[in-house]
Structures are given as C-alpha cells and as structure tokens.
Length: 181
Image 1 (cartoon, rainbow, N blue to C red):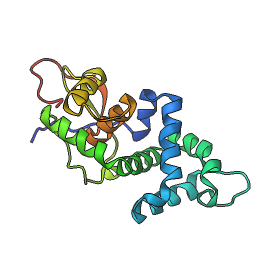
Image 2 (cartoon, helix red, strand yellow):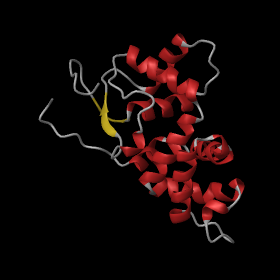
Image 3 (cartoon, rainbow, N blue to C red):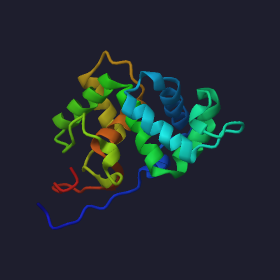
Image 4 (cartoon, rainbow, N blue to C red):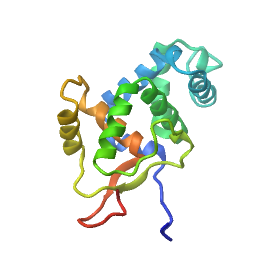
C-alpha cells in the first residue's frame, strides 16, 4: 500500500462533464423508473428528495409525481454530492447489462475497479486520477469493438465508466505511471 493519501472530488463534480440534456435524461430515467429499483434505492432517493427537493404544492418533494420532480431533482443534482451518488447508483442499477459490460471492459483494459455490486455511494467522491492513454473516445471505441451489437449511446457508456471506475478524468497519468490505473 502506498503512503500517498487518496484525494477525492465530490460526486457533484461530474456536472462539469455532463451536458444539461444528458443530466436531464439520467434524472428522468431514474424518476420514471423508480418503482423498478430495489427498495434500498427508492428509500435513499425519497429521503434525499424529502430533504433537498422543493416541488411547489408539495410539502414532501418525494410525494410529487415524477414529471414535477425532474427539474428540482436536477437542481439538487447540480449541488448535492449525495444526490449525485444516489441518482447515478440508481441509474446504474437500471442499466445492469451496461454496468456488467463496462466493468468487464475496464478489467480487460487493466483498470483497478471495485466489483459491480459494491456500494459506490459510500465513497467520499470520485478519484481524480485517470489512466494514461485512456479517454472517453478510446474507451467508447473499445466498448464498440468488444460489444458490436450493443445499442448504447456514448454518453451512457462514458457515465458508466465514471461510475464503475469511481474516477473523473481530471489528472491523467503519464506513460509508465501505474498509479493512475
């Protein structure tokens, strides 16, 4: 084990890497498919909604219909690291095949990643270190090579890479640098 202490970026730092449209798509999917989530995810989202989401006409934002919660959820997503963690965790549960494919891809690319079933919401945030010679374009190409019949948007693959790896591409390693993988 290295003597270096890991530094983390808060989960909501991911907003710098997401378009507004994609952020809305992710939140919409989670809210409109909330009943398909395991109880633990639904409960976590409802707890956060009750504390952080203000929907006009509702004392408890969790009780509002999904269509009315999307905009307030996005606002909370942009500021609240725990909201980001819970929403992306729920989104990954709603995309189990993609989660498994991305995990397998990252392992094949020699990334050190937690198993898919690990609860990443318990982490303090994202690691800022990113492996040398890896970027979203290359990873998406590798994904398409490995899974040519997959009908998955590159934004979805990229978000799943960030979530499964627990990393944001802020500090890219250099050639021969094994610490960033």
